[in-house]
Structures are given as structure tokens and as C-alpha cells.
Image (cartoon, rainbow, N blue to C red; front, side, top):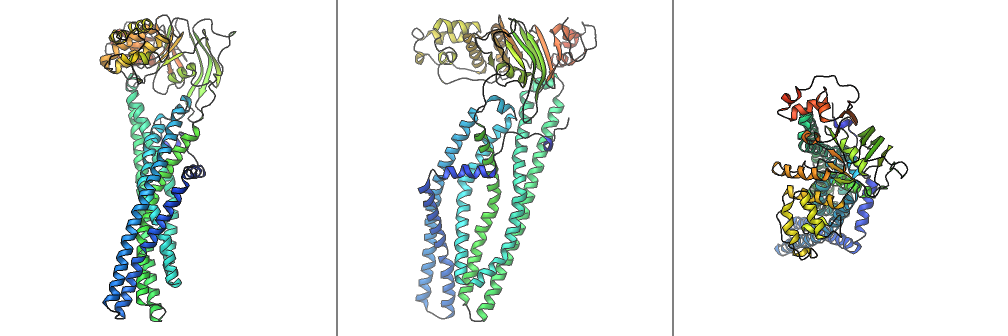
Length: 605
């Protein structure tokens, strides 16, 4: 299936240019005095910068008129003083500006990260997780680089250009008009660059995020992809997105090179026009050779600032796109209503366990999701959801957990006393002791209750640390215990024991646990499932085989349903995946007669 980015749906929102300007203005208004001080310092540095060209012109006239060495020495001293003064004030201005920018960036980072933490799961899942990751890393870095390095350069260039143009005009309006001959080249080149570069650099960031997403999905879902024989498609997807990203970056280089040609042409034409006009004016006696020299030096002084300003548009474009993407995260932060649509009331709850009735949910942006799903999990049993990445199994789990309200249909729980307990594959170890981590879900848990929980999940290694406290009342005295990924997940399962939910959802809870710890964690999960209604999202079919029912998902719908034995007895996705994932599966499956798989689902007898 083609995965061309040009036809891919948009990711998280990107703020408009007006919204970005508003955000920058709000940050600047928090420091009015410092902003004014920066402007004054840069203006003073630029004014001192024109002292040298003016003094050099005077030196030329003094030499031409034999004014004497004392006069020439005076102008030389003036040129040196102007250069030194300009450098000192410019350093002062850059220092003040850098401090201001860093404070503004710190505030922006705080706003972005705070907003990202407030984003609901449904909002993040509506795009691609790597898009948010790209914004919190690449875009923050791009804005920080532009603010810390590019902003001082561009601001000094802008002031230098403005002051030099005013000085050139004051020297002689005709020379200033001659210099304007370069303006069409700068304007046309810059307009062409801006028109194309904004699109190109925006696409570069989007394609980089899409490439990262494909890599993440391929790495994190390698077991599932291998089981369902979709690894070639995943690799092709990574390759396609990487090539698309490279092509767009090459296009960005081409756009920048075309701008270089326009700038060089403008410099050539402008300097030639000033020298030619100066020759005519000097021949007519309107100006001196020294004035022509000063004008040429002033125009030549513009080469650097104009180049910095225009070349810096590359970084400005990247920073602007980064800002737009970051402000998009900030604006998206207000969480939608957490009410669960379709949740049952007391009169319509399932007779036992968990029931899903005609549930449909699609992410508004990407269109991914599930359609018309029915599922009944009797109380005290486990249903395993299996399928390739993006098939809809995790989406259904999140709908049941209440992370996403269903678009249509309903979710019914036998017990409305507490929500389903959701345990994901991500490893979370919180600051503090083992007791602190356990009491996150049960603040009033006693020492005996915590010891019972860790023993239930096979985490006997934590008992000594807990009992070492005086009656379990002072967790700060708990001795340090080395925690690896397996132990961290065991503690997470122990927390679930303390929460004592009627329904537990295990979303690939062993995916990030190493092979050395997987058996211990799986035993802990088995203990947690005992006596509870459980929904198990499994990337390893050996886990799914222990469930009372298995539901195979593809394209947002259940395609097979049954026990492990009945699904192995028919030709279908589950049997193919089991054969691919289990080395000895070939011998196992030959015990079952080959039967055709009914459509759309294979049900248990």
C-alpha cells in the first residue's frame, strides 16, 4: 500500500503566521524596558559603524589636497575610535539581547512542555507520536538556535542597513538612488525564496516527523510485524519516507542557491551604479573623490548585513515553522471533555464483565480507528486482542479505558465503582521509594497490603525494602534497591493489585521488558488477571494463547474470533502469525485439520 506523504493526512495542528506573531508579541511585552534598551544599543553600534567609512573618505580628500600628516592622523584616529566604539557597543548589545532571548525561550519551553503534558491521549494519537516528539526536540532546538545565534546577527544587520542607507542619502541623494539599482535583485530574489522556502522547509519538518514515526513503528512493533509477515511493508514504508525527506531537503538547498545568485547580481549592479554615478558627479564638481569613496564604502558595508539578513531567512524560516508548530501545541493544550460518551448507566450495564456494542471511533485528522466493533468478555475471563500495528486493537482498548469517547456505540461495564485499570507498555518509575511508588494508587495502603501486593506479583525482592521501615510509616528510611526494567514493571503491576480494579487492560505490558525479565513480568500479569475481567493486547501470541478468547484485528475490525485451539484449526491470520512466530508451530498446527476460514469472523463453536 502506498504511503506517499503528499497524500498523508496532516499531523498535529500548525499555528498561523498571525498567531505566531501574537505569541512573540506577548513574550516581548513581558520585557518592555529590555526591548527598548536592545534597540538603543544596536542603533548606537550601527551609528558608530559608519564613522570609519566617513573618516576614510576624509583621508582620501586630505591626501588629494595635501592637507598634511597631522590632519590625516586625526582622521585615522577617528576611524579607529569609531571601529572600536562600534565593536564594544555591539558586544554590549548582543549580550543584552542574548539574555533577553534566553529568558523568552525559557518561558516558551515551559509553555510548550506544560501544554504537551496536558494534551489528552486522544489528541496525541490523532496524529503520529513522532510528530509531537519532533516538535519537542527538533523544533525547540531550531527556535533556540535561531534565538540564541541568528537573532543577534540579523538584528545587527537590520540596524546596520537602515543607518547606512540614511547616511548614504545624507551624503548625496543621487548616490543613494544609484545604490537602489540593486534593490530589484534583492526584492525579486527574496520574494521567490520566501514563496518557495516556507513551503519547502515546512515540508522538511513534516517529512522528518513522518520518517521518525515509521522508524518508531517498525522498531517497537517488530515482533508483531514479523508475526503477521508485514516486516517488508514496514521497511518499505521507512525507506519511502526517508527518501521523501531527503528529496525535500535537496529541494531546500536548490532554493537557497537560487537566492545566492540573485544577491551576487544585486551587489555587482549596485556597486557599479554607485561608482559610475560618483564618477559623473565628481567630474561635474558636485562631490569630491573622498565622498565617492565614502559612498562606495558605505554600500560595500551593506554587503555583509544584506547577505546576513537574506541568508538568515533560511534560519528564520526554519524558526518560524518551528514556532508555528510549537504554538500549535500550546493552542491545542486545553483538554476536551473527559466524559465518556456511551458509557452505561445502572440499568444498561453488561450482565457481567465487559461488553462493547457497535463501537466506532475514528481519529478526526488521520481517519484511523475502529468500526462497528462488538465484544463481550465474561466476568473473570481474559480476551486477547492481536493484530498488526495500526489494526485497531490498541484503539479499542483506549476507548474502553475512557481515553477516547466512541463516535457511536457504547461500552458497558459490570462494575461502575471504578474505571478500568490501564497498564501500558511504557515503563514508569516515579521519584521516591518503593512504598511511594505503590501508594500512588492507594495513599492509605498499609505495610501488610503493600507486602501482599508485591508478593502476589512475584516481587519478593521488594519485601525487605518495605519491611525495613518502622511499621511502614516512614518511607524516607527505606533502603535503596536497584531497579531494572523488569522490576519497574513488576511494581506497576503491584500498583494495579493495590487499586484492585474489576477490569484491567494490559496494552502490550511486556513490550519494553527485556528477555531476561519477561518471564517474571508475564507471571505477574497472569496473577493480576486471575479472578478479574482482563483485556490483553498481545504482540507475542504465546501470551494470547492463554486467554479464554482471542480476537484478531485488521483494518479496524475483528476478522477472527475464538480460542487458541479453534483459531489454529482454521486457515487465517492467526494461524499464519502463530506459525511465523513460533519455531515449533509447524508440528503443532499439523494436528488440526485444514479448514476454510469463514468471513468476516471465525467464531468459537
